[in-house]
Image (tube, one colour):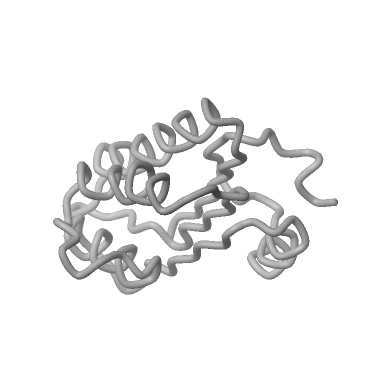
Length: 131
């Protein structure tokens, strides 16, 4: 039980966790596993586009942080009961086009989503790594 050591509603660095292990654990728990490899993205629009494609967001996704928040919270909540989430954002860019401030703004959206789901007693764990 890999998730016994991880709070149910958190955004944290992936550290020693392996993506395959997180995916297996999500399947074991019956949680949604959302994975985005962002190694090819270099800017905020590219990061948002990559996440939208990887998470199968609707075509009308606005490609901004507000739209990302809506997709990670209200849109999913309206689709019915949810068992929980394990989210992996691998290889977040670290460059002038996607600097620390941009990364923190993106991670804040996932922190807000963790709080949103936590209020509903639904686990939402997000793991990230940098390039």
